[in-house]
Length: 233
Ligand SMILES: O=C(CO)[C@H](O)[C@H](O)COP(=O)(O)O
Picture 1 (cartoon, rainbow, N blue to C red):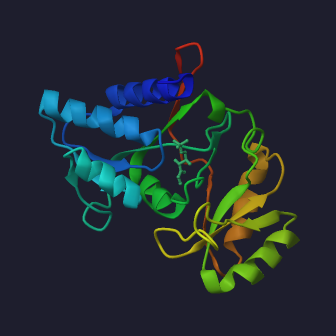
Picture 2: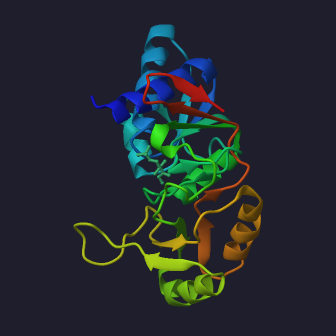
Picture 3: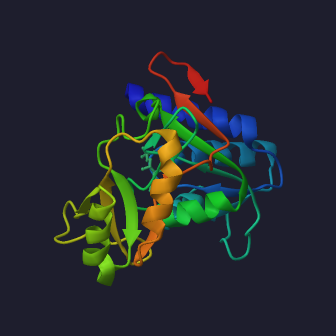
């Protein structure tokens, strides 16, 4: 396992060990770091006989839950979650985050918003002072397919540089689990006090379904560092 994978695993394991307790309803995020959180939840469920109910944020999360033998529910049956564990593309020093590198931020945001605790697990590459310092792909925005052209026009008026996300093997745009497109918008480096204004402005554009800016949502972030430590903010 390389250094980055080890860092992801350490962060996820420590977060689950410190936060998870019996009889919780737990949101399961998406991406590669959350895989380790699910691994640790499943280990603890088995060894401590915990009663944990899991709410997925994506097709991937649903499969992770099922394959780990955990109890699967959904947000309509369990809309009051105790905690949600999720990865992030970048986290600033005030715990604001960019999510949606994997295109799952709509369901991730719904689950995080309905959780008492929202815990981010990530490796050292995701820890920044300001958002978009290291993450150069822009803010992921989920967009209604028929509206992507006018939405991109209006994102440019906000001084953003929008790009329609294209598939790697698939010809044409990436389609989310919800049947929508993703537009990645580059606004340059974003200082914490600018985030809410820009997020509200994007939400005001008809056709924008959800942004990957998670402003003031995270309660804690666990970063696996290169030196083997875990930094918690
Ligand atoms: O927001 C996400 C998916 O929509 C992921 O949590 C984010 O992309 C981080 O993924 P990884 O843990 O693989 O770095």
